Amino acid sequence: MSDKSREISVVVIGGSYAGAATAKRLAQLSKKGFSGLKVTLVDKSTHYFHAIGFPKALVDAEYAEKAFMSFEGFFEPGSKHEFVNQKLSRVVDNHHVELDNGQTLFYDYLVLATGGQAPGPINVVGRTKDEGMEEIQQLRQGLDDAGSVLVIGGGAVGVEVAGFVAEKYPTKKVTLVHSRSRLLPEHFRPGVSNGAVDKLSRLGVNVVLNDKVEIPSDFGYSSNVGHRILRGQDSGNEYASDVQILAVGFKVHTEYLEPLEDALGHTLREAKTGAIRVRPTLQLDSSLAPHIFVPGDVNNLPSSTKFGFKAEMQGNTVAANIKKLIQSGFDKAFKSQEGSKAVAEAAPVVGKWTDYVDLILVPIGPDLGVAQVLKIALGASGLANLFVRQLKSKDFMLGMRKSYFPGNKKAKRE
Image (tube, rainbow, N blue to C red; front, side, top):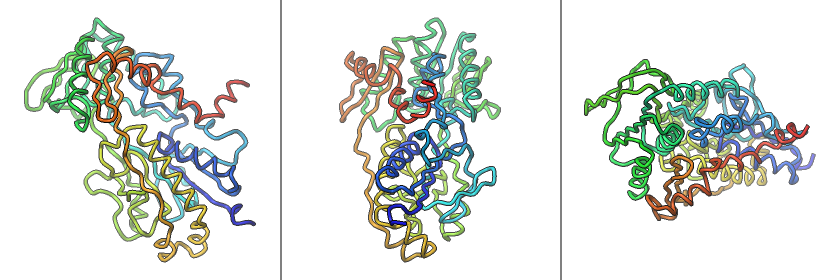
């Protein structure tokens, strides 16, 4: 067996933006001389859901249908690469993971792209397309029947949801409450936030700032359909509505790392958040595991990096770094010497991920929007509307994702 035809196993956990980008690029490497390379993509859901497009999917049933794409069509038909529909249970050690069904997978390289879980409906809970569609349909039906809607949280998702709901249902009372003094992430310029308030107001949205809404303990996971009165934590303001949509909070679930932490003898996660600590190369922050990478929302990089397109960029960096390790023969040496400390510490230096893109695009209904590009705020201007409409509002970049699923196209032709 030639060195390039050696068996190499890459396991990618999580098929959203970071994981999909990594798996897709590494699968291409098997066509470029590394014939023994196999990529296994593991995800708890049967279908990829284009979460970026949730605000549009909420008010557009036809779009929602298209936003789900089967993972069975992720790899090219006939390839050796594999999709496994399971949830990660635990990372056992430096070469094995265990899934919820008890199945154990061996890996030479592991990519933990398990993402994060926001409490809002953007994270579809259902593990099948039918379950996911039912979740969205129930919320959409609630909006159809409601007289008033409360959106809690004024980040990008909350602003987009409020805008699309207000545009779709112009006679309904829509209120957006945000706990901070400005809408949208505060590392963007004030002009973007001010523009968002202006354009939401044009659609009839009542924007309330500096008020943190108390969320009842019995509140639904992502939203609540039914009349409720919620209150501001400090203000005492009362917000009566028939539908309440949460667009706040963010959690990661990384308990699966505990066995590896025990095996390596040190913690790998932030104590407060559970986020996995990474090096600038997106490798796990451990000199004993240079073959484990953590791109996307589950890592401990700053909140300014928690955007879908940046997760995808991180996935591309991880793929390039694993490619370099494969080309160096690292996996062969690490496996033959049973993961020795000396081999791990002598791993080749790989590339750092740099957050060099300063960009936000926020559609506010199909025709309005705000943006920031290269430190230039496009807020209340008409140019912002045109810019966002051309780049995002039409399909929330869904068309770009379809190329990730070649098997789905083939199935439709047949």
